Amino acid sequence: MADPIPALAEGALQRILVVDDDPALRRLLRDKLDASGYEVWTAASGGDALELIGRRGLPHLAIVDINMPGMNGLRFCETVLQFCDLPIIMLSAIDEEEMIVGSISRYAEDYVTKPFSPRELTARAQRVLRRISDYGYASGALIEIDSHLAIDIPHQRAVVAGQPVALTPTETKLLYLLMRNAGHTVSTEFLLRRLWPMEEVFEDSLRVHVHRLRQKIEPAPSRPRYILTERGVGYSFPAKR
Image (tube, rainbow, N blue to C red):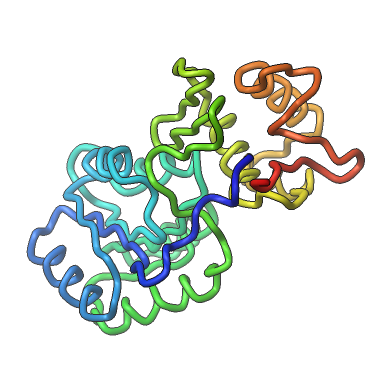
């Protein structure tokens, strides 16, 4: 069985992904955040950022510009949050209440307008990471569970008995939420809120997704090994034995 999605190894740095099409700004933030003790990844577009996550896994925080060519920041956030719970700080020259409120409501932990102080942005990043430091949400690209199962969060797939199995975004995020809390029961209410934050969805829908996911990854779906039910409470993913 799995431990919670692996935390940082001792001495490893927290990883921040900076997504902005301005190379000078990427260099500025990389230098500032690096000097503050973070490992910094950079990408020039939402598409580049997704490709980077696919190769390296999930960072601990993303700082994302809204207006970029190709896949813009909002589309990137919408895409990545379909399959994980990556904390995001939005970065934009758009200083409009509707955009700020909408971004924070749907995607972001914080919203910073350009021009900005790199020192202030670093402080905001530190605040977000301190607040959620107990979340084991960052991971490598492939998480080995046991000899039967491995999970590839960025590519939304499982490897079951050596064979790749495609997962839907909702199945991936459900599995991700359970794995990052391995050994603990995750309440149905929490799962509904995190899987469908902007929709009114009921427990029956969650049961359907759990059933389908079990059919894909369990050796014997009627006797689940990975996705366990705590009746009247929620679901859990076992901690490593």
